[in-house]
Length: 256
Image (cartoon, rainbow, N blue to C red; front, top):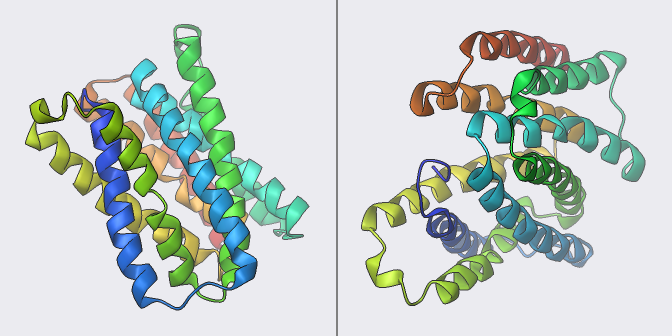
């Protein structure tokens, strides 16, 4: 949705606004997270501000089917390593193989001549986004486990995104009257999908290894690549089908 619309800042503001509204409601209704988890909520909120900025520029400079696989493809391996270093969380040998296979399948989408013709700024933004995704995934994985109240943790984290909406609206205050209503609704709908998706990811961290969660989560890259093919006319298609098979094999290894 961000890629398909010219005014990406407004769309991202809509996404963050839905996170804020939904998070505020959940925070009011859910138990308060334990004090030990608040440093993680604050850290994750700050990291997410950088994530939004990087997403804005990455999709401004590059194709969806290139930027998304790069940023998401490196995340599972980094999350697995981070969970091992900072939490002492380990996977079985088959689990490590699954994470590696998923990452390789995702990165396979970017192999070949496309990298040479890609705007270096887009590649840098995509790689940096992948690192940021890995960092906030580990931070939230640890934080939600310390919170004692997963829904409360999710609610307060999402509520903090009001600053993103406020920043965009303040920067665009002079042009807001000319913003088409369609852009607003696209952003709000994207926010619903985004909040539901990442809320489930955070909750999953209380019952499953962080590396495995990240690997299965990033398999959505294949769906994004196919959207790039059929909605935006990006090519080639055969490479995306091969990558889908590789990623599916990695997910099966993780589930075994």
